[in-house]
Length: 491
Image (cartoon, rainbow, N blue to C red):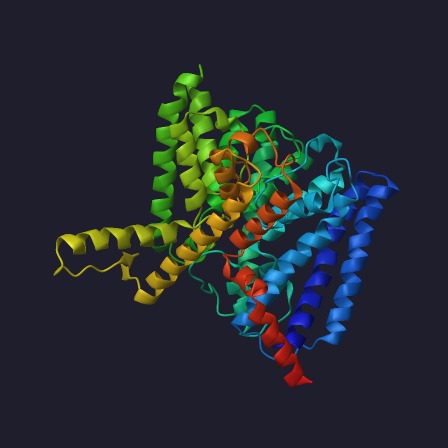
């Protein structure tokens, strides 16, 4: 790998991080927070700028960013952002007494997981609350996508960076120029966020709360500035607004682009879209009929079912009701939704609907072939044949996904003997959902876990958000051997 261009690119990204952290600093000034709270952001901004300058000077913009370089840069960038971004939290010990706690919370922010170790959000200053949710907004669309959107120019190889970060099994440009694609994506992203914020204001939220929850919805992250999350507002209007918004951010952004600027009819022919909406509709109905006897108000149980399904399948993780107390049937549906996730090319986590559909169709075809060996079965999506290479890559991805899940869960079971708690803890962090079940359910946090378990789940978040391979590359010993050899050749 080309070590020089890796250092140069990471250095530039650190300069971008310093710029981004100036926003919560500004929030602190607006709310006239103490010098200590302001200083807590000045320190990481200075560290980020200095490290960025050192790396840029010691690196070089010349060379190529191939797939390996892109994956290495992506994985390193997300870890470094989480570490430096956690400094203000660590310097705010009321909720984050250790480095691991702060790192967990910040990685949860950037990966849009939304799992938290904070036990009393009301003690946190506005700047920290803003920074937690702003990290969702940045991480939702992607750190590198944001950087590409603001760069004055980018070469063709920058698509490798974008492909290493954008979630989903497929990647494609919606405009001829990559930087233009990134800008279009971010403009739509910002516009939908503003619309969500406006509707929340109509529901009675104050401006700060509306901004916090709009950013959390946009990034499908789920951090709230309220200890009881959306349940604090006890508003069916707010729950329905957020349900629709969460579902919208769980849709492939390419569909919005084609619907707005090309053919709306063609855009809404997306098979993944209809599977996604169908799964949401069926799941909400099943849960509604299963839990309606628990509540006296039919509207309350209906809205709670829709809201919770929308929150879990989009991996947002906002909570309006204690779904951990629901019957096992409903809880199992929610567990399945954690794994399915949203659409490819959305801000949601999970396996993605398109992968699940392809695997489901492949399984059906295998059953048909077993019954009738002479039958020719073709796997199709959107009326087009799915290439065998695509099927193989999806099958291999899911195999690696399952193996890593098992490893993470085995480590977590060293601490807890409750299978549902351990399983849901890994499922919710690995798929970037947020709340789990039983010991780590919607009304509890991950505060009680050991430092080892918190660290393991932090990396589970990063593996899940970056779709495994960049993180695997980062931890592969051969990566550094190749990097060393490449640097020796350059020198």
